[in-house]
Amino acid sequence: MHVILLGTGAGGGLPQWNCGCHNCRAARARGRGRTQSSVAVSADGKRWVLLNASPDLRTQLAAHAPFWPEKLRDSRIRAVVLTDGEIDHTLGLLLLREGTSRMPVYAPSGVAALLAGPWPLTTVLEPYSGIDVRPLPPRRPAALADADGGSLDLTCTTVPLGRRPPRYASGATSGDLEVGLRIHDPATGGSFAYVPVAAAVDDDVCALAAGADLLCFDGTFWSDAELHDLGIAAPSARAMGHAPLGGPDGSLARLAHVGAKRTVLVHINNTNPILATDSPERAQVTAAGVEIGEDGMDFTL
Ligand code: MLT
Ligand code: MN
Ligand code: ZN
Image (cartoon, rainbow, N blue to C red):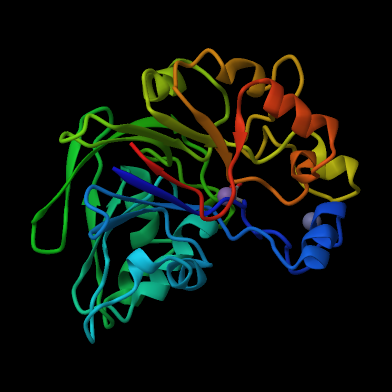
């Protein structure tokens, strides 16, 4: 299985358009930042599945040759799997509207309901190429397939991690709204756990991560009051459904014990001090044996 980290930033990316924090200023000066959270996986390097579809999708697909068409109309993206209904993980569906067939979109039950209601991408995309929302029942491997039902030679198992609705649908409570994914390649035995949003490192995360060749995990915030401490009026990390990395109760201390062979942080917010090359927080991540994801990192599992 091939895995490419398309984008490793949280919502807003790095730099974020209206942010003048230390990391955003440094990214502008360097001329290099992070696009918003998404991963591509493929059994054969030709037919790809997007795990979440970010607002930066166009740039992300242009950046990697495996996605470039070889014919006049040629989609290397054969399906999309969603972990949640947040804008940074779904807005890219709009950017696939030029497709020539209905895009399969695998979604947990609560997310499918969001796409049919308060975030009406199903309706909006219908006059374009349309999306075919397919259910992802929890804790059962689903064989991923393309628009014609052809196997993509990967299975996807979801584990529900939370029921926190996105801000645009704060009343939504039904169905699974946040899941982690375990992608399995039956041909190689390779396994990939993808958990970009996690409120805790609990038994459910362990179920996803145990024995995985690669775990990509929620690296959004270092501390619970990170935004507040910078003077930004915003909820705490935990209130936003993201376990902070740092501190005795933080996720970093637990990640070494979840049983993944390699752990890489993704969905990293622009305010997170681990992004500063010389920060003590970054040194703690490295000392814990955890890697900080970068856009364009690739893996073969
Ligand atoms: C999140 O991950 O908490 C959301 O994507 C935040 C947002 O961008 O609105
Ligand atoms: Mn997000
Ligand atoms: Zn910033």
